[in-house]
Image (cartoon, rainbow, N blue to C red):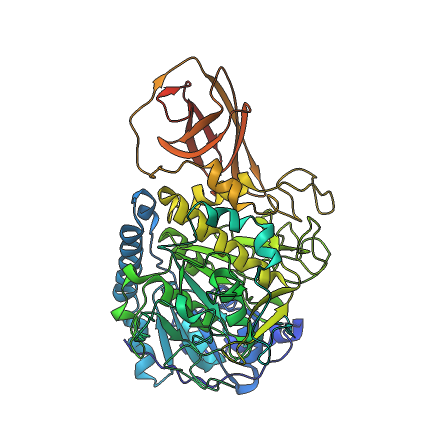
Length: 608
């Protein structure tokens, strides 16, 4: 399989698709009868071909131009079987193998076609697609193939990254006050540390501008560093293959060409062992993939990093060497692929869903588009499989003015976003300028790693939740401090401003059970508890409301499909945000905490 990574970047231009260009493109199809490999083109068929090509591709290949575009195959893998597997390693291996095998059996004819014509291309398996550099005629010939579903652009987009300010303890003053950062305190992370859980045994992946791995607050937590020697294999990948303003292309070691990646990684796990306690889960380890060059990203760079996280491989290696047992548990994604700049709505969706199926929690920034409603518009922020984070003014339960809000309209779903909120203003973290430098920045970029770190704390405290995406999201959602707002919809919780509310990781940890494993438990013996339940879709998410009476203990165990998903206060009600969409059914029981004295079973069914 050929992988050509030295692509020439097309010049960024404002996306438009006027009626004139569309008409010209349709007219041009008549001149390319040979585009149909069977020579049976007709006007309706040619119109169908045109609809398979994204407007960005049509524009950027006009007048003989060449551009990079994704050829997405019609035959996509079904990795739904991973849901029944209990462990991360089993899930990861299954998803990787299903996707890899599908690409190997379906891409051959197309790869041969590209090679015979000497066209630059790069194969991906996480979405079963091939990145191609070619002309409009090439795009049309590819779209005419029955094994091609669509042709989508690979625009070079510029993320508007938060501009950091110099912290009080910059390079000349490395000694910060011996205090924990305010955002960390406000989430109650230090209270979880006091219980003995600080993220141990959890690996967080940073998808960003890179990381200054030698930084004093980051180096001790790098998985590639054992205290004596460093090994970057399986722990670092650079998807920037040309240019590279600061780090150069294909950096063989972690490098940050902007403060952003070091800062987001620091908020999740940073701690220098002394005065600089900047991270939520300082006991966790981190690995990284650079998917932006000084903030400039492409769908190809984004997908390549998601593919690396699904099954990491050695520095200088390739995906055939991928090892899913080395995948991170959680990834930080404080970046976007703006649709106005040519990113198609669903180009990244398959890769995001593959990570979730593999048990990787993908935490995503809602974006910084401001205070209007329905402006969560950039992939991957609005996908159901993304755990999307809005920003609070640190230390308060007020929304930051820049934080994007739902509902999601760009894909027609009406989905509620963000899912949850975290501190995101005046956040101090690591800088790339020296090993003891720190900066301060604001943005949903800063809120997102708070949630990634919170999830690491949850998983270290309650191993039964590890890599179980839906129950883990529900645990954080149900324990959040609910904040009402009618600005972009109903005032309830969740809503389109705060999601389920401000994260409270102590409540999530102590409200859960310390010993659950997401495997089937013995069928409880019915007791005197009476349970009723109803379901509705909240922002497109299947959400169950449980109501019970007769329980006498202080807490109850909530069972869903034979698994204890939470230990909740015995208030008589519990809302279960399942994290699923579409058709589904869930069987519930409520039991006296730690016992087999349980309610009747109630099944809640959801339609598509």
